[in-house]
Image (spheres, rainbow, N blue to C red):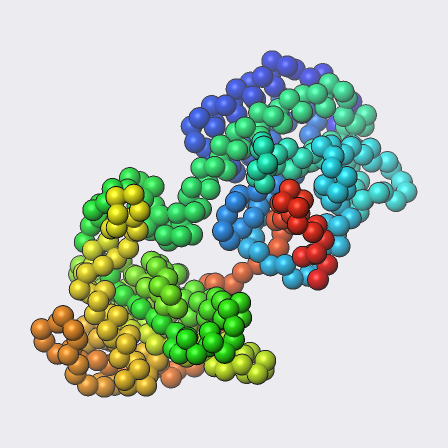
Length: 445
């Protein structure tokens, strides 16, 4: 524990500000900036024992990213998907909530040795030897819902001096500028990854941005589609149908976005997934086996979804999946000022036809002979079909193990989602306050 007030060296703290500028210009990510900043202000002589920072990310799946740095143990990072379930009583009793609801920029509290504290978190910090606590809100400017919230804690026996607070507020501005640059950079990556997929997003960021940019690759292909969606839409209504569609995609499509696979596009109530691979036998085998394994997980997940729907008096969701392997063109197509990044070519057309044949054979999964040959295992031949645009008839098969039982926990092992973090609660509340939405409505359900 720090026991005396330290003089604040403006020279060393100016070095921290300079480092933030250089780090921002270098394009360092947010974690690197926050970690480096915390280590440097501690090394400069500020008796900081704990720093907590939350940044809104304007991410389609996440709202915030949170960092907690402790002098004794380093830094931890948290960031979670939206999940409004539960009552965050702890957050409602936090200094952040107090700061937001009272429209304050700063909340400072000295932490005494005995007696109850105003906020539960301060009781916990007292156990860590913290003597002074300063929370703050720093928007990134204008009416933007992006911003930074956080707190500084010290274990100095005399708490924060005025000089220390002045230094923290000055550095806070430099940190906000560097963080905003990192958040905007992450935003571009987040948006491209979420809307285009990881592989396609990286290709665009790496410069494949002109119409016609692309390449020919080999890949195992998966195309899935919901059956009787029009009937469901008419029966359930617009919002209920949208919810059903999202639940369907969560169940059936998520396994194909792991283990080398990537959902390349959603098309209405269907999707296309690719497993890029080399042109030789072993890479093709590995890709096809990964795709088939994801099929079994998807079937188990949809079965569980339908079980829950029956409890609610809803009809089962039915689907068809086509499996194929071949060469596809991978790149930008469209208008000069409106492009899409996708896979196209004869192999994509063929997997679409295979998916359509699941209706004819009343099967959930149908694969081409090429796919089945690479996978190995037991298959049942369903027949030969003339696919439009293909000269010779194609043998179509059903995996015998498609009836195989997959343990539900295995089906969800690599696609489990966490709940709402304190960081996300902070930014959701901040966003709702900025946009005039009811502050407590989503939290008190």
